[in-house]
Length: 293
Ligand SMILES: Nc1ncnc2c1ncn2[C@@H]1O[C@H](COP(=O)(O)OP(=O)(O)OP(=O)(O)O)[C@@H](O)[C@H]1O
Figure 1 (cartoon, rainbow, N blue to C red):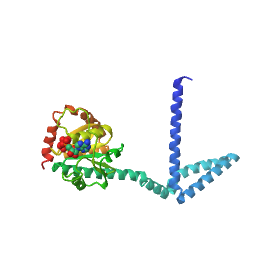
Figure 2 (tube, protein in one colour):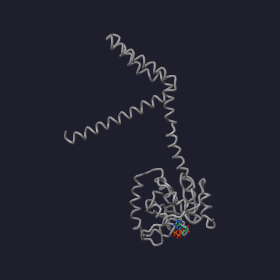
Figure 3 (tube, rainbow, N blue to C red):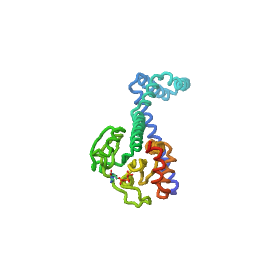
Figure 4 (cartoon, rainbow, N blue to C red):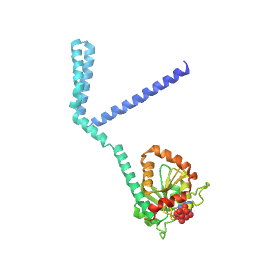
């Protein structure tokens, strides 16, 4: 057999396997939705009658009765949704309130609330020119970095962020690690990026944010103490001088997957970050609208 034929055979069988799997899941889900209902017993009764009747008809070859049953089956098919209307409604309601769907919706709501709190915290820190560094965990655990700081495991609020980064606070130095929408630890030491940056004014806080995102998939948010400028770091790249609106927009793109196209475009832009005219000035320009208010 030519190799091309074999490949076609494999893809055909592969499709059959997927089809069987999908059908099996579908039938099992229908069974699950119906099993505890009154309709289940009716359905089982109907199937039993049908199987026995078809067997007898095949055995004795009664042509007229076979014709009648075939026609009746068609009518039954149309009547089924009417007979099982309550069960179908219950099953659909169950799908609508299923745990995974609930989890997805709740997860999105939690993320939206979290981004709102982070936005509020960042904007107020920026206005007061309080230096801050947030590291937000994604798929790669930030446990090693958490262990360098003080464990908090606290509910994240703008007030808590402000208290922690307040210059006189004992935990104001270092980064705040956020995971699962909570403050996991404060005063954490992040790995400082060793890469050469064209902008020599980039200090340790920003370098630590870049460094962590070079090693993990975390997202870091920095508020400059000097200028109040807001920056986002991701994949070892820094996006500086963000206005409140732009910051919120970018965070939604990153965490809620809104406008993925744009996200790709900006990460290309970020790749060319070193070519920006003067990021420090961009901070100052934009901050005239945010930091000085
Ligand atoms: N490795 C690190 N991990 C976490 N935080 C760090 C690290 N190194 C420095 N920092 C924080 O950065 C602060 C020093 O910031 P520095 O002024 O050098 O940076 P910067 O990037 O210029 O920031 P800013 O614009 O706020 O001045 C320290 O007080 C400390 O809180």
